[in-house]
Picture 1 (cartoon, rainbow, N blue to C red):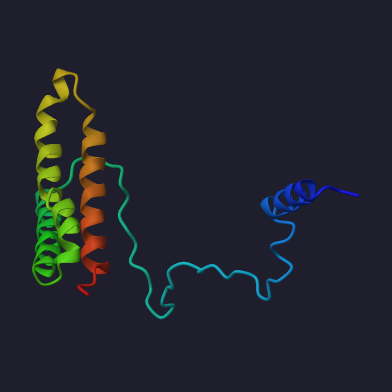
Picture 2 (picture 1 turned 90 degrees about the horizontal axis):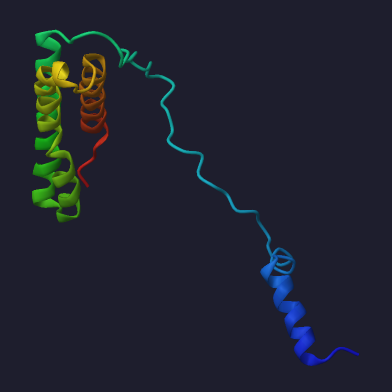
Length: 138
């Protein structure tokens, strides 16, 4: 015959290993399938991140997209304080583009390769465009 302390130990080990936890479970856990995609809307192809220098018009469009996103989020944060931290986070995006472009002058001084800096600008611009399109002020 087992002592009560030994029974409690074995029961505790069984619960810890999950042996006794699924017996009363009626339904398996369902996990979300992720974001839904509207099949009627054809996704817009995104330009590649790698490549040479951006045109002046593309660079201006990237800066405008980031400025628009910052304005969108920060205007929303005025009415919905829970978005204040997001406003603070995205407010650096236009400066990040400016700094990456200014960093092109430091390439000869052992700075990053120009392709890397242009790729960074494209990544920031893409994040701004996606963020502005996806952000819901609620």
